[in-house]
Amino acid sequence: MSEAAITERSRAKPGKSSRADNEPAGAASRINELQVSAHLMTLETGLFCVFQTPGSQQPDPVTALPGVRITSAPGIAGRPEAVNVSTFREDGWLNGTAALVRVTDGSAQILVTIYQLRGMDAAPRLQVLRLSGEASAPDAFGTGATPAANTRPTERTGPAPDVMAHIQRSGDVGGKIGEWIGTKGSQCWIEGFGLAPLEGVPATDLEYQAVLGRNWLSPWIEAGKFCGSRGMALPVLGLKLRLKGAAAKAFDCTYSATFVDGSAIGPVKAGETCEAESLAAMESFQIALHPRDGKSTAPGNATTAKADHTPPARQPLAKPPATKPAARTRG
Image (cartoon, rainbow, N blue to C red; front, side):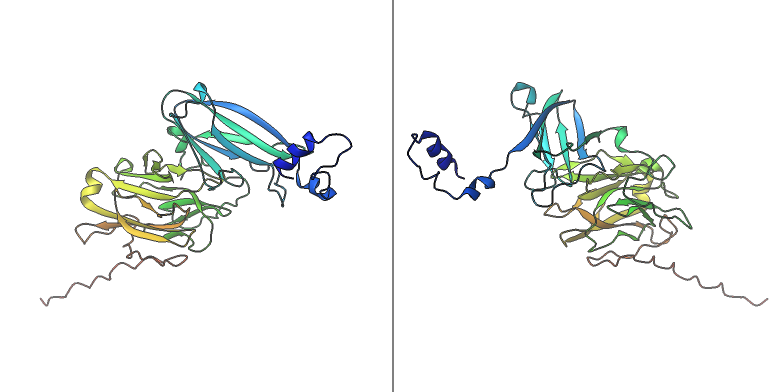
């Protein structure tokens, strides 16, 4: 029923029928009352992720409710100039994804609004995780990292991985330098990644960032620590690496990635951002280290194959060049 029809009905005099009264009885059923609750949340300076707790009430298959929206709060406390809210759905709904909230100066309030069908038992449960600072970088290769709910940990056999990624609906997946991590065309995005300290490359000489949004990058994370999230439906949109100190003099670093929209970027050089123009979620990536002298073996005891834009699901490492036996001399 249109707003005009509702207004006309309210003005009709008793005993006289209006156009709204003559509408079919089923027209009124097109308007459903909702239960709406709102909460003000105060956040300090930093980068935060707001996501729905795993195991929360599943949305109605027709209306997709309950639904959640996050916006800057109105008024002085909301400080719109200091708050930036980014969702991974273009329509702004949080459903099935997460929201990034960045507060640039001081503290500010955000407005969390939950929409439910009348009679729904419980509202979605939300969690807030601070992404900036040490909390965003737990140990990716030790025992401190806990697999997320609804994911299965990958059974690890053989040598320890050089590269680790947490992949949507798959859990932690590891590989060596030069291998593709993740699967092109799977539509399963990467939620976080990390590199182990490599032989010949001090942890402080290798750093990386995750692309979290347009012009949004995570803090620099050094080798041995995890960058991103686990089990929060928060996709990584790309990556950026850099070498420092002796490692920058000894190696060149390149990396490539594919994205859920079908695009592929790379190889790009160290210090450049590898992301899709559409800012689609990253589903696979490859990191390669090339010795500058052309003789020594790259970290991870593997020479890295040249990246292209059509990676296989799992690209094997290239074999080291065979060494010729030394020539024998007659005495």
